[in-house]
Amino acid sequence: MSQQTSATYPPLKGSQLSMGTLALSLAVFMNVLDSSIANVSIPAISGNLGVSPQQGTWVITSFAVANAISIPLTGWLTTQFGQVRLFMTSILLFVLSSWLCGMAPNIEMLIAARVLQGAVAGPMIPLSQSLLLGSYPPSKSSMALALWGMTTLVAPIMGPLLGGWISDNYSWPWIFYINIPIGLFTVWATWSIYRKRESSIKAIPIDKVGLFLLMIWVAALQLMLDKGKELDWFNSGEIILLTVIAAVGFIYFVIWELGQDHPVVDLSLFKGRNFSAGVIAISIGYGLFFGSLVIMPLWLQTQLSYTATEAGKVMAPVGIFAIILSPVIGKILPKVDARRVASLAFILFAIVFFMRSRFTTDVDTMSLMIPTLLQGAAMSMFFIPLTSIILSGQSPDKIPAASGLSNFVRIMCGGMGASIMTTMWDSRTTMHHAHITENTGSSYPVFVQSVQGLMQQGMPEPAAHAVIDRVISVQASTMAATDIFYMAAWTFLALISLVWMTRPKKSSAPIDAGGAH
Image 1: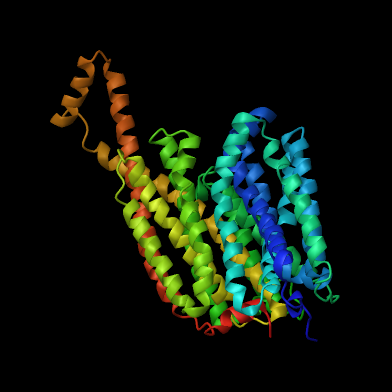
Image 2: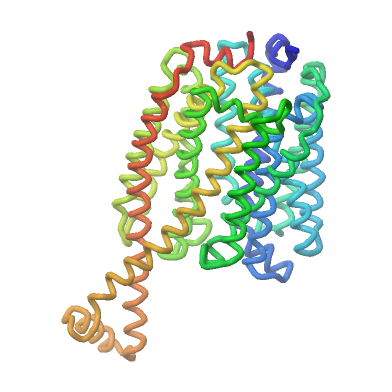
């Protein structure tokens, strides 16, 4: 049975198109903002609710786990309820859960509200993508992807800045309350424009086993990644248990889903070369980008004693080029080979990370800013071409499922990137610290002179040793961070080969993405 999706409706025009684009972009913005805004406010939230910052991080973990489970279900839910109805319900529940988060009297209530918020946020991102693609004529669909990509790029940068500012000047519940007016406006605008553009509904039996297995392995994997560093990874029984559950659950899940007529997650999409190579490239690239987004502010704050706001300002220029260039890329993409644009993005990312791998402990703000600015340009050329390659050649009824699955893999890789990079950073810091410390002690004249110099300034010997140890720690963690940046740069260059394994249809890639056939 061929399915009618919103793509079979004529494209929107004029004010309806701009209003629809604004509403869908705001929904994405609100969603992505919410996954990063809480990070900065954890100290304020945990202090206010009287729990430790470690317990406070569950505010982030609970959202991430629920969100990761619900994103791949988008395809199945869409056929069950229809795109527009599902999108509207998601936003209304998102507004409700934001209100509950702000009202939460204790950490348990807050975490429960965040679980609900993460779960209903899942379908919003893939559905906004497919609704937007259906609103534009096929020739303009890469422009639609550009506008969509712009909001996904700007929100993670705005999050920490806005979160820090709200926590400093108001109280933390406001980081959740700001969603309410945005959400209500989006619901009104979406309903007034898209209610006549509903996709057809087909009652499919629910794959209960598949759903159960998905929840088990994704939750185990997310918990393992979030709590790994805190519990010292595989030296902890809990982490080993979670890893085993995730691995076994994943294997059973794949075997079960491949044998189903109506799977919860359509894994057959991976048979397509464009989809599989594109998803791997965008996910590994996003993992490296997201990992560095976590490490940079941490390194600036813990080692170079920047404040949270200062570190946010150093990272903020990423948005400048991303905003300026996204529409340009959207315009030229139909005329050029998407693989070339994506390759250029990976080359730019490599240059950015090679520049960062030369950072020292006395790095100035300008040297920090230049790679960050360049990274914005790389980001605008990264999301849009790869998304159009992934969706290239998909039939309209597969778009929500393809978008949901590719976003799911990308977001999971973002979490894995952050966990792997912070862990590597810790272990390499320890290694460099040990190497540098080998050259200290009474048999090394330079060390002895440094200690004596400090003692002449009136410091007791233990204090002088402590000062030198701090200098070594800062040096070691900087060397560790630059090691990771160097490795990331080479990985980006290696990803170019994946891009050239795809065969996107020339000029019909956007058409198929828009699902106009």
